[in-house]
Length: 305
Image 1 (cartoon, rainbow, N blue to C red):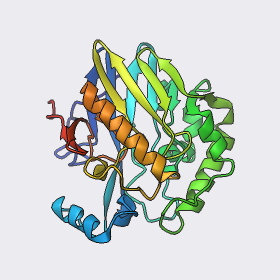
Image 2: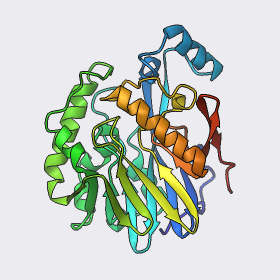
Image 3: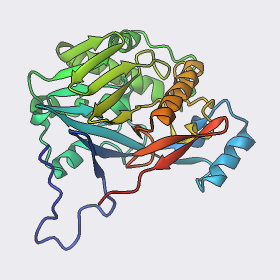
C-alpha cells in the first residue's frame, strides 16, 4: 500500500496532533482506516423514536453533550492482491451545512503515501453525501484512473433516481443536499459504476453484500483471509446501536428494517468474533461485538503500535 508512517525530518511538530489513520492486517489483506473528520450533528438523530429522557440519560452516561456532538466519519483503504480498494469516499466539500471539519480524506490519503491514481476500485456502502462527496471535489476525478470501477448495489442507484425521505428525521437542508450529491455523482461517474444485486466479490477475500435498511441498497463489506475477518458496516451500526439497537437513526430511510439489519449483523459478529469497523463509530473504530443481555457490547481492540 506504500503507506508512509515515518515522521518527516526537520519538523518539530506533526501537522496533526490526533492520529487520523490506523493500520490493521486481516490475514494477507492490508487495511487502513482513515478519518475523514467529524460531523457535528444533533443528538436527537441518534434515536428520534426514543423517549427524550432515556436518550438524555444515555448521553449523560456516555459523558456526551446533550444537544449535539461530533460523529466520526471513517473510510477504509484495502489492499488485496493487485487491487487497492477505497471503501466510501468521505464528505468532500461542505455543502453549506456547517460541516467544516469533515472532508479531510484526500489530504490524509496523501499523508499516508496513497496516490489516488493507485486506487483500482471504489466500493460504496451507499450514496449519502458523506460517502460519495470526496469524489465530487473539483479536480479529483481527473486524478483517478480512467478504468476505476465503482461497485454499488443496483437498488441503491435506482433509489436515488426518486429518493423517499418520508421516514427520515434529518435537520433542515440535509435532504436537498443528499439528493443533489447523489444526482451529481450518478451523472459524473455513470460509466464507472459496476452494479450488483445482492453480493459481489471485488477482490480475493473482499466481498460486498447488500443489507438494505439504512437505504435500499446499503451494503457492508467483509474482508476474510487466513482465518481472520473484518466487516466494514457502513451506516448499519452507530455508536448508540450496541446499547439501543432498536433506536431509529435520523438518516435511515427505512428505520424499522434498519433496526432489523443492525440486530442481525451484530448477532453475526458476536458469533464469529471477527472485527468490526463502521463509518460513524469513534476513530479508529476497530473492535468486536459481545452479546449483553438483550443488547450488545462494543469491545474496542487494544491499539497495536
